[in-house]
Amino acid sequence: MFEIFKIQILRMLLLSFFVFTCPLVLAQNSPIKLMVGFPAGGGSDAIARILAEKLSYFLGVPVTVENRAGNGGQIAAQALKIAPPDGSVLFLSHDHTISILPIINKNSGYDPKKDFVPVAGFASFANGFALSGNFLNKSLHEFLQSVRTQQQGKAPVGVPASQSVPELLVKSLAKQFELDLIAIPYKGSTPMIADMVSNQVNSGVASVPDFIKFQNAGMLHMVAVMGTRRQAILPDTPTFAELGIKGFEDLSYYGIFAPKGTPTATIDRFSLALKNVLELPQIQQKLSALGLTIEYMTSDMLSQRESIYSKNWAQIIARMGVTAQ
Image (cartoon, rainbow, N blue to C red; front, top):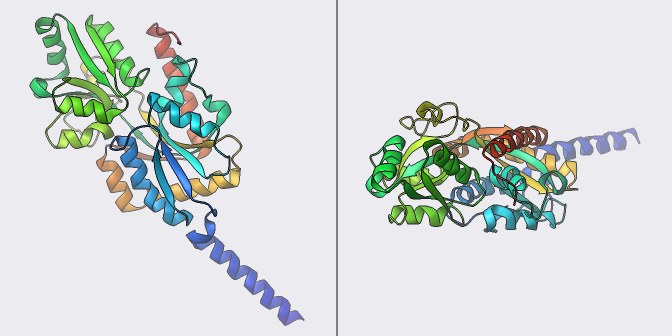
C-alpha cells in the first residue's frame, strides 16, 4: 500500500512539473481574440501581430488579431464591454481609448474603471510631429513660421483620431503660437499617413510607432517628440520641451485589457505569458525598432499608471478650456 501511495505522489509531482513548465497546459481551452481599435497597417496593429504569435506559444492556444476600427478605438472598447469575461476576448490599446476619450467624450459608451480590468502593460511610446512634402527639411519652428508668413497663419494638421492627444497637441500649438492650426481627424494613422506621403496634407501628429518606417524611408520627417528626453530610435529629433513647448513630457502607454469580471487567475496567466514574450530578444528587437520602450507592467501597475496618466491629462485638458461633449 505504501508503495502505491508513493507512486501516486510521484505522479502528482510529475504532473505539477508538467503544468508549470509546458505552455500548452498553462493555456485555457478556447482561442483568444486580441482586438485592436485601429485599422490594419497602423502601429497598434503591427504591435499586436508581433505579440500574438508568441503569446499563442506560451498560452498554447491561437491568439488572433481582430481590427475593430472606428471612433478612436471606441468601437473595440464597446465590444470589449459586452464580451464574455472568460479571457477569450482581450483589447490591446494605448492611452487614447482608455484614458483620454472618457474625459472629453460623455457618450463613449464605456467606463474603463467600471467595465474593464487591466491585464498587463508592455510599453511606453512618444507621440510626435512630422512633416512631409515641401517641409521635409524644416524644423518645427520653421514650419510654424512658414504657416504664419506664407499661409496667412492657417494650416491643416492631420491627427489619427478626434479627441486625442495628437489633436490636443495641435490645439496647444495653435494657442501658444497664435496660429489657426486645424486638426484634421482621420480613422487611424494609416489613412492619415497615406495623405501625408501623397502631400494631401503636409503635417501630422501621431505616435513614433506609426511614423517610424516612413521616417526611415525618407518619406516623412519627424521634427519633435513628446517626453523628457529624445527617443533612442530618433536621436536627432528634439523633444517639444527642448523647443520651449511645455506640457507634453508624459509618455503614452500600451496595455491589454479584459472585460470586468474576468477571473484573476486568467488575468495572471495572460500577464505571465506576456512577460515571457517580452523577454524574448527577437521581440525586444522588433518592438524597439517600432519606437517602443519596453516596460512590462502587472495588472496593478498598469492600473496605477493609467490612473496617474488620466489625472495629468484631465488637468491639461481643463487648462486648455476643452469641455466634455
